[in-house]
Length: 117
Image (cartoon, rainbow, N blue to C red):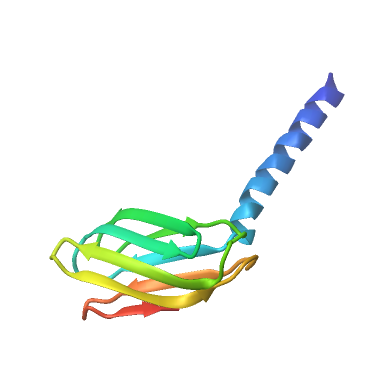
């Protein structure tokens, strides 16, 4: 019976480690809202993926991970709608296939500037 518990515990630990390590390996995009207003809708298009961030409160951020495999290379194209009727749109960065642990951060500043890092 003790052997069964050890096996179940080992498998559980392995699955938890595998799950959390996937967040380290997968590329991600973070939107940081410092615009002074709530973001009502934020969307980012990659060459073969569409990411919908939904709404983001003032002073908070939201991160989404996307698949390693991208069918085509291209840029991140964003459209961000704020509650104060400001609309931010443009493109930044470059996405390719199999970019391990790539992190892109899009900052929306209070002076209506969008900075991609």
